[in-house]
Image (cartoon, rainbow, N blue to C red; front, side, top):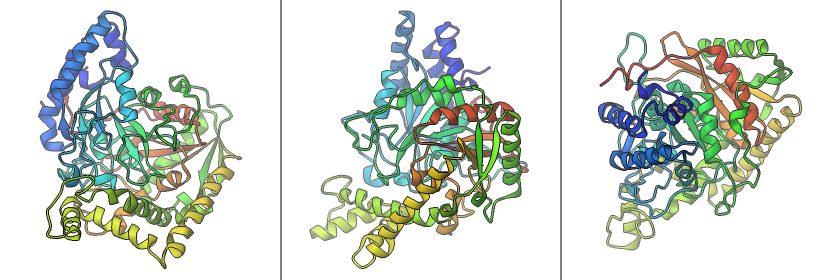
Length: 494
């Protein structure tokens, strides 16, 4: 098996057994990036030389028997996490030359545990998008292809670069951020596993903000076990983040393969939404049957206010982005475009620095926060958000975990929905409610649809109970036996 096809767990074991070196492992991934990234555009910035230096240090640690959990493991880092001395752009022109003097807590934790960073992955600009087509550095191409069709597909967003890199073998795992589904939806589109932890589980310090009450970092990898390994390093309390929750980080890998006998799995009636494709619905039913065979009890539940989740999200998130992105004015942060007056400088800077989708969301957010509309929109949205959270809280008095589709359709072609922002927003219909409620959720690939594209199912759990998600996810993974790989991948494209 090619080194780029290994899981993180198998690669870590192979490194410790000296079957191959960290330099060989990282070198294989650097070569894969050089060969495929010009086509996929999964990375904005690559760090091959620094990665090889880190690999040499990893081999020295392995030789001394001082290996840490991720020693020598090559990872992609979403270009929303500040990395000391390495350009961090948020996929925006306004930050195209920003080189942070500090490290985000999540990436610092990964480096502490020996990870090797091979590059900064592409994303929708400032994480605003569901298809990874809004990046100032160009769209990302999904490595999967429809059967008999060479059209370029979207990888999902906003963590599409991370998802494409992992699926294609350009990284063994990657970081993502999830505001309304930006880990889970691209994971489903690219046939990998993506886990959004409970809000507050992973520090937001050093992560460029989109919507502060929703943003949460999480792992993306090819298996549930690999996500557990990554989350073990990423999670933890951070006093520099006021939203970080001080609670113990359990041994996530211990949950893999745990018995599900007696586990109650809720099936929300409201997720049988209009527009749900027949193949997604069939995959959902198959997932229900698999969990039932694993000893789970299936329970019908209702989440009545989740139907308002998408509308509520597109009030709250743009409002917060309007506030967060106010700092990028050419004076305090970001690239500057000169103007004759201060106002002219602001206008020219933001017009040149922000793309159309970011400008659209800033305008939406500014509108709902403005005098005369704050009560009618933003305040009402916050009240509805509380009702959505209450729906989940009440459902978890009856069940241990919820099972739903991740996305209403498989991946679509670039350009198919780009002229309709509302249709693009609907891609997040199944992922947004869990984000609004701050619940942990995970997407697991369970099969291929009629056109040969991956389909994902979503598990939603109680706050800070990622272990149950991982246990149920590993059961789904084992039953599905998903070993399919995309057409464009490191092993076949040299």
